[in-house]
Length: 305
Length: 325
Image (cartoon, rainbow over all chains, first blue to last red; front, side):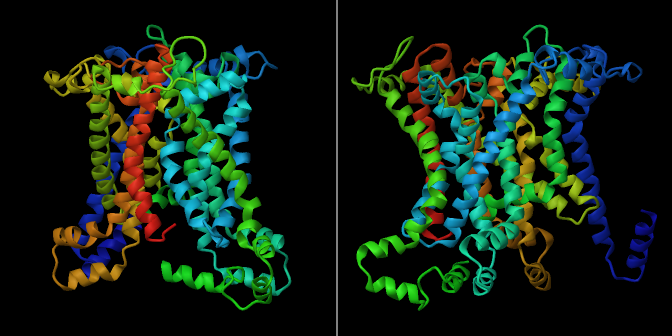
């Protein structure tokens, strides 16, 4: 840090860097830090709440708990007594975490297994109607899948009729269907940027069609596949309202279970905060660990536009 | 982009432009052989499963939803698909709640999208100033978006509570006059929701804009500098115009998102937020799942689809025309 400062001063003195340039960098960093504090304050607050000794949150006298009372009771409650891991904390009765994992597993595995070949076909095969299929995909990327809430009445009627409403596998399948259009489009665009010459070289060397896909396309498309993996995981992990409408209590996923903690009069705030943090933790880890993948996926719509 | 695509196509041994033997043999063969050897048929196993899933769950559900909206189905029992009526759509214009929620939906759409874009652009310009720890900042800004609405809606309602964090802070700095009952007062309800949603989504806009900023070639900046452009002119004439595609992309995503800001409002207020914060998606849910007016709920969902289509349709169509797909 001090080295940087010294170097900067030197650069200014020797005229390699203008004073206003340094000023801008300082102003930018300060502004960014202030904004982080502002943005992150709610998060900081919920974290301290989860360590605090009950109540305090809704009343003006105790916005912040006394640090000397910090403890892990709430986490203990969430992990061993609530429905988070096991139902009512009874070992052996799978709880919300298991339900969420089942849904997410179905969502991710089904979507990946149809998105990768689909994206490949749309990227490399110039078949008739290809553009139209893509158009239909892109059009309903947002309208259909994004607006899944608007299909809720039909879904409910359909699933209740078929006796599938309380089924985690069907729910996962539905999330997968919703995730397909956007992610196929994303992966297709990614594959478009893999030079065809690599495949040609492999074909010249006598590789079969499948070998080309397995040994050329898949390894080169890894970053794109990682983005799809993250997005489909998030789709299944975070979704709330469809799960809430279709599932019965024994099949509640984590988001529904969290919502069930809220009570108009007596919400256990400390426990709620701890539950929310444990629920959001995997997502936060993914965002920090796979930052570039997440960002490239998010900026994709804007870049192509 | 198009030229790149064309050259790829020319290079692609399977595109049929080359003089490969299989292609010429195919041309001589009969129609059936042509069809069998075509890329279309050959590629079916690749894209069919995906398309079927989408057709069944997305298009199928939309179609069924439209059908239900014509049935007049309400209460217990099953919809009667033999007797179609437009009654549901006819009663909409007179329904005060529907009109209020339509108005709120449009207000939310416009305010949320424009404010998020402006804040996002500001953040992107800030972060683009080669600041220290840039990556950390970026991830932190983005983090709220990754959180489930159940989490964000609940803790925003704590903050907005009449003796919650916001009012306590206002009181602490001597601004008691500005401490309102944010979620109880009809004047502020929707604005409070929009503010919280902007908090959650401006990071997304920042990422989109940052990608756009980074794709502007450096010599554009230098050329403007040499021409003696001031910083303000630089932003107005060089940078902002080149962010057009980022803006369009982000706008579409945000607007469609705003249409379904359902989860947030539902978690905050339940299925009856009152006329001042009602949006179409919530009205739909209430009509269908609380009042058992299934057909009316479905009809409101159809209106939602129509709105979404008018937003995304032109966007997807221009993409299609430009060959960007």
